[in-house]
Image (cartoon, helix red, strand yellow):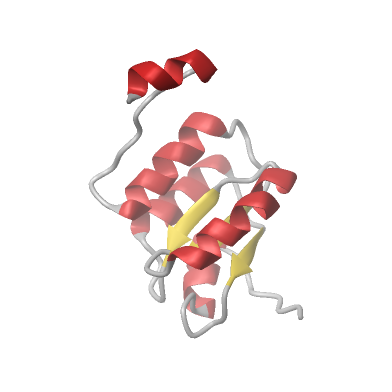
Length: 111
């Protein structure tokens, strides 16, 4: 499969031990110095899938998260100095505490 894809451009396989690690590996490999991130609930694919065009327009990676913030997302956001972003889905899936932990900032809700 990878060999046939090379006709279209660069091919590399990125994988982590968890889906959270994998989202960080993609962010590290494809986004140099992003100013913000898009956070998506990791256990329900539509948020991340639908958020892809938004993330692309913003030049921002999608980090997978859940109700409790994964350490991988926290470490990535702090390492690259991100403290702003967009959250896909409601606070029942991605809690305000998770957003605060990842972005290291208070949550400002917009509708």
